[in-house]
Image (cartoon, rainbow over all chains, first blue to last red; front, side, top):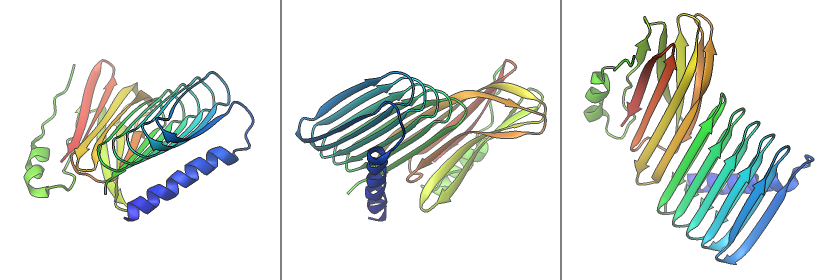
Length: 145
Length: 124
């Protein structure tokens, strides 16, 4: 139960970070509600940022970012959540939080200051993280109910 | 050249420690000039892993740090890799990972330098 609270708080922080960022540069924010939500995001070079939040069932996110100071935040709430985030070099940060049953998360990061965090709550959870470079840090927290 | 390391300590610990993370195997290579370590600690109920390389002599090379977990909570795969460069007597944390628990956890750190590879493993 404690971990659920921590994960819920983490999701709130991740999403609020994406919303309130004042840093100049590329940005995409997508929020979807309902059934069968899907989004694909492609970004190239410089100060890329992605934020998505999906609430409903059959949620799908795929995000690809080129080099520079990439951030990505994905929040999915519902059943059958799938998220894939790919980031090129530089100061990458990825955050994926999934709540529901049938969660699948994938994060791929190129060189430099990579950090990846995946939080999954529910049944049938899979997380896959690939990191290249010198500052690899990965956090995966999974829990069920 | 690939140095295969004894896993006796790890295997001996398996039966004794249950779901608790077991002892590791540590590797040394190239005239013992380079060794690796997987350091495991607990913080706030989570399990933290650090892949560390130690150099007796100056060395540079590449590494792969692979962590996998299959348990009741789910499955997780972490693959980290990159380069390192160390002076004599230096150590470096090559990769870090945090997981919710140690159930079904396996980790392997491979370090390659000067054409030689050594590795360390930990697992339940």
